[in-house]
Length: 495
View 1 (tube, helix red, strand yellow):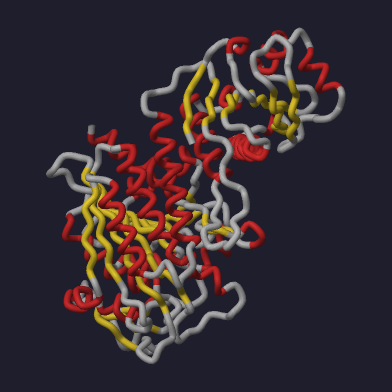
View 2 (cartoon, rainbow, N blue to C red; view 1 turned 90 degrees about the vertical axis):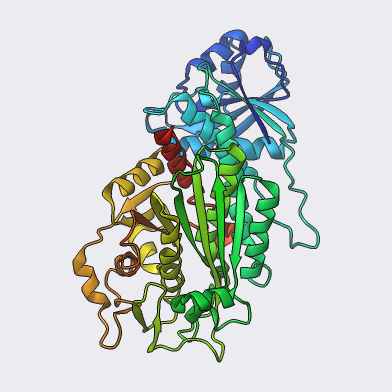
């Protein structure tokens, strides 16, 4: 998809389709009023026919509008003007993209970025239009023998708004959208295809695509030699060998410390010996959503050429109930030297992550952010709208929260207090890998915090946001938008 910012007079815009927002109760904005004046009242007359009333998501095509060079108008309902907010704006843009695509438009001009949205500027609206459009037009059918004819017909969307955009706005938004799509592709692929070795190949493909990315892949012999006993406790139960994938994006000064992103890459999670119930177990292919977001974020940084150094570490393994799998009660020694009693093998994400967190110490990072589909408790606490964030450095947590608000990839902070560490006590090791039913998301983060004492660290639990279930089942690509926004702010601070 191509995107371009335009602000030509409406009667000079020549396009197969002009997209126009319409509010309920005949509430019109400046754009609608201007178009109605150019058509000498024809537009308002069409509305009075009653085919559309402005309810959110409604669409109506109007053909050959007088006084305009547009071949047709696509009216899209925006709902009540008083309650028109960021979520509504994104939904309306997604609806417009789907309508344009199904209508066969190859090029269109959208005036939706000109809609008034409290506390949001032109750059935000343009960026969200790009992200919403690309998200709506995404499809995944590479494993269907007869793919549906749903390839995007829309090839170019011009964004009309009176204000000039800051330099690079659309380019960064496009790079972010491509990173989101990349992450969705990886997570949507089944576990028999997307295993740890496949992820390693994807990293090497990124290296070939971008000169700014360097890759190192550690196999199980390397991992065991390093002393990553927690990682191996998970990986040894599968015939698919685990991988520690290290990707360096070098966009900043040679000696500048990197931001480290660490992703949980459990390419399929059966629960191990602590076997999961069979219902919806197919969705455990999404348990590498954290890893997918690391890939997507680094790809976005490289495409946009963000002036920052970033290291992405992916702890990739399968969690299977093989004869070599870990048992409840096993004790393992981590890379940090601390020992862990494994009380539940289905709490495996924190085991691969804890060794990965210790591993990133060698890069002397300015900050470390890990992301993982870590706990079902997070879904109980926060549902599917926002991710959880916990950390040991309040300024880092706050920076991520602000990035989440700006990108509308929102997060909510949970407390990380010393008292929760009491729940991880073990009679036989330094700690247990679970803390019981109470405060499951917090105790998981408390466990990880014991391996993050040498750097500023934050943990994103994306169990409720990395994918959706039901008839729209599929990966979301979150939190790529949040991470790109956060890294862009880090780059601006370093400039």
